[in-house]
Amino acid sequence: MIRKSEQLPLAFGHEPQTGRDDLLVSDPLSAAISIVDNWPNWPSPVVILAGPVGSGKSHLASIWREKSEAVDIHPTAGSDASVIAAANAVLFEDADRRGFDDTALFHVINSVRENGSYLLITSRLWPMSWPVELPDLRSRLKAATVVEIGEPDDELLAQVLVKLFADRQLFIDDKLVAYIVARMERSLDAAQKVVEKLDHLALARGTRITRTLAAEVIEGLGKASQHD
Image 1 (cartoon, rainbow, N blue to C red):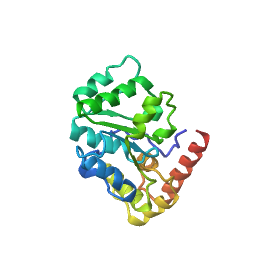
Image 2: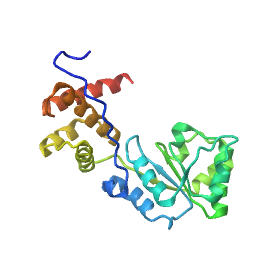
Image 3: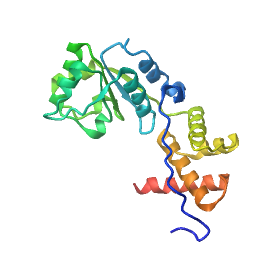
Image 4: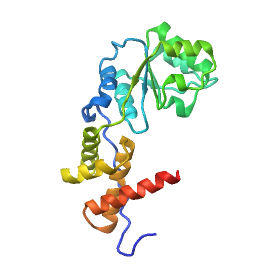
């Protein structure tokens, strides 16, 4: 329900900036950034970026896709993913969430290895946790380079919040940013939600973003996550 003093703001789009220059560098991301920056000089033709939701995997994948001119694939039964992989660098995002066919992914990896191509996979889970039944695929995955993206630290969360606010032409006091960081869920996905909710609520109420408003948003998001 909308309070009488609130108005619904127009739904302006706020597309996140996903270029290399927009990437914020910190310790949790350093290894993953290094592997993307060092392409095509990879230790193996198959690289897996593993990290929690909102940890920056999609941003890194977007940078690599542009740099390598990679083609998005989904290795399912009957797909032409292995054919595409023979002639292009390929990207398979959210492997653990979207799922895949064991044989199809096995053929993609073989195609990449045989044709001097590259495969980048993103996942929330390490490949040893994927429900793989094909022994040959398990062997191929063990030979891949797995790069873990750690949980964002306070410094990275603060940088991300400042950037997300700036993307919306909002400039927030450092003390308020520190207040939010100390109380929010520790993920880049949560940072996106906090900024989006704060912007929306401030516009709806015709007010500036304050500590009180931030506390309300963070509490509301916390309750919502408990019911998910």
